[in-house]
Image 1 (spheres, rainbow, N blue to C red):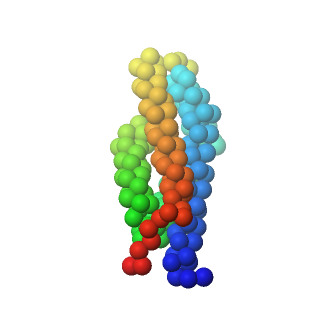
Image 2: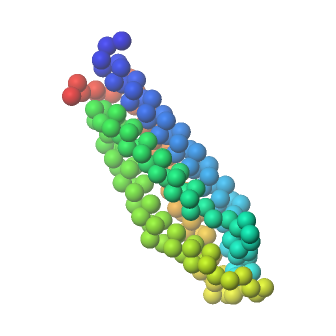
Image 3: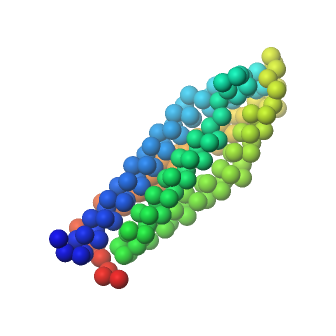
Length: 169
């Protein structure tokens, strides 16, 4: 196998791994969005019991690990695909969108969710909290959809195969 073919094979492999990990992350996001988010946003503070029991839900550690591992693999894939100009440029664009979504998550979604998690459960529905939770839920649908579209962008990149220009550098 010549050096160019070997570089291309490694680039493909790392891109496949990073894309597959993105699908795993998307699956977790979709599960959480379909099952957990509608439940806790249904009528706060009464619906916040999911976070308050002895075995209450707290996904912070899970999401920190998932995103960290995934982003390391995205960077490795970018490094191995750097010599393929067409892939590199699209990967940089997708990475910028991904980073923007992460900033949005860290600036709005995570702090707002932590505020809800810290609230006391009461057997009433507070209209102001319900509106705030509904806004969070609706924006989350948008955010998860954007993450899925970024992942589909990586699938699109995988099709750049035989026609790629591979630089020797």
